Image (tube, rainbow, N blue to C red):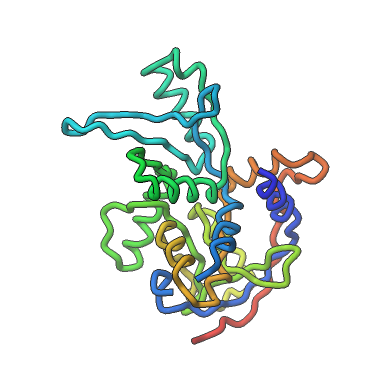
Length: 269
């Protein structure tokens, strides 16, 4: 959790957003970072799972066409994990549920658990559970963008765009600008709204692209495009609040300061 605390402080002291463009590669999937760099990007995003008093993951088994499927759920939302415990498990097995608790890990931890399970050919499925409302948002945006989608499979990421480039923001304590990949549509919309206020003449050229988390991670692992290091996973608002709660009160602001964007030209291909 130390990495989460560090990033909580970083996000908390952001005082301004400077907009610039990063030209799009042909496709996020078409566009390799060292494994340590990939894990660093995943480390800043918390996930939540259920554990028993021994610290073991809670395995949920169900029958599907005479076959038993065993799963461990990891939730992007702490509240969703708590709801699963309170509203489902406590009804199905109140005695067991009373001994369980929600435990935070990082997305990097989840990724490494999945990789180890593949090596060991573990029969347990480690499932990352998205927020249902973000699945609906992803489907709506993709249909609006001309993609015919009836169901979004996976974890959606929302990327603010300007014409043929992505909007970038600086990360405090860094001289580089990054393309934020948001877990919530609302965060992408808020960033676009700030840009439209700053550069109203470019408002009609803005939009949101939807990507899928596992595809992005695969691309980070396999692409040799240096631009891929410019993409940063940006935790949800709920997760940012959780991260700040881990830090000492003196260094954990209650909310992100209001952004004061400036505009910069979008780089073209």
